[in-house]
Length: 601
Image (tube, rainbow, N blue to C red; front, side, top):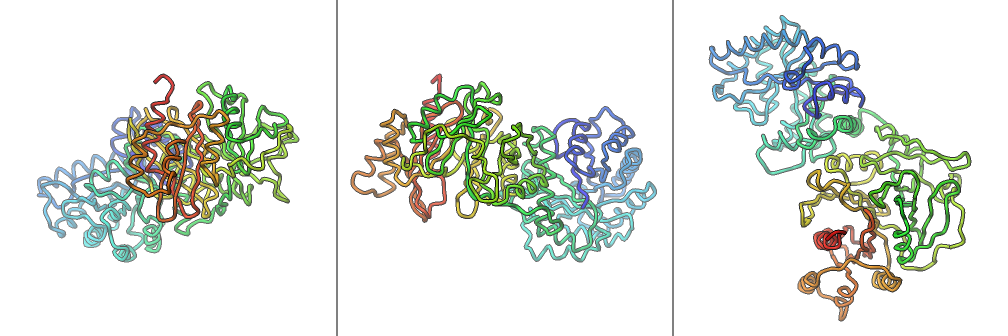
């Protein structure tokens, strides 16, 4: 189906918004009146700009407080509407959105509302314009889609139809059965469809609407089910996004538009309208790649953790460090930045690397060109929203090229035992304006399941975190973000969590090898003693090594942290098989301890 986006959903001036929408691949736009009023371009110039970009103008919006008002007020409304209709002719827009009235002058009289809307439609028809009447969730007298349709039906004019807005309908907490009434609306009378998701929140619906809408798949609404009702009613117009969001209004328009279109592609797939390449769920983490101008401190840290430098890339300055199935690449190539060591790339084990790449490309993930020598193994890679490179890999599997073939042994075999078995999870800090985009990306492109978002208290703000994982937990990625640009990814560390079956032994070996673990305050362990019962001596052992502890219905979780190097630190974890979390309750203690150890403090 055709796709469209309201200009209010993007940041910047009108021309910037139009360019972003076109480059992302949208077919059309809704012109929000404020964007037109603030533009230096005249309506004819905007029309020409859209035509040059290949965009149709699908809707002009909004006209407010039109219906069910006293005659004198309605006369003024018609004069206002005639001016707008002439402007729309110049703009090349043939449909206008009229919101149900919130005016204190409006009366609760459906017959009057229908009569005045018919008069409005008659005027619009003379200009070749259609009127799409929408029920605002906070409308003074008309606040539901079925009520709006009854008024439209009573008005009975071919230039008058209804607009269905998912937010206004679903924000009222409608019973799924209530949506079945959509099928009673003739498809040709649904003039327009606006889509928005939102997190489920207990707050005033107007404030919820104005500040917290998000793109489909990023909130808690059943948009696929809603869209199914609309399609079954016979609607064949564009799928259009109308999203009011404080974050999107400050983020760059280009990436936001790509995120927006991706959400519509995923929604159409969820509703059974399209069949893009199926997701290929990763089955493990092949490697984590760190880059930096000087990897010597990280090399020392990895050595203390029990890793060995086992191989070096035949044509690039990249070393492979390994312990068990945990692999870390250290890269000092030209991509290394002066801001210190950072986690730049992740290798994901894939049962079908080529299929995973096709899925990613179909959902607008940027395919990364790769500089490689003729003898190098071909690897497909895409960029995640935060810029992390994601490689789809096969490690030593028959019939598929193995990325390890590009590495030549250096005579230091991986230790058979050292405490670390594999990478348990990765924690990736997202730019503050891309948290919801990152969650949707990892779910839709990679096929990972998302857990609930959690808030974590930091000494200098509130952080959000959301984990994505495959079914058996062999791939776990914790996505985190700070509350504002000052807490952006540039200022916060990322980390690699390493799984061990015996954390006490692994932590003791690390210390004996000269490694330094994060110091945890004594108050934390006093609180642990009050909350849990431990075997004799166990709590003292945890205290002595700086090991944190958590427990849920599935089991226990023990973990400790190395100090930070550049923008990276490591975590050693021991989880019971049934434990599915990440020790989120301990995060405030860890964050406070890291602030104490931050350079310059």
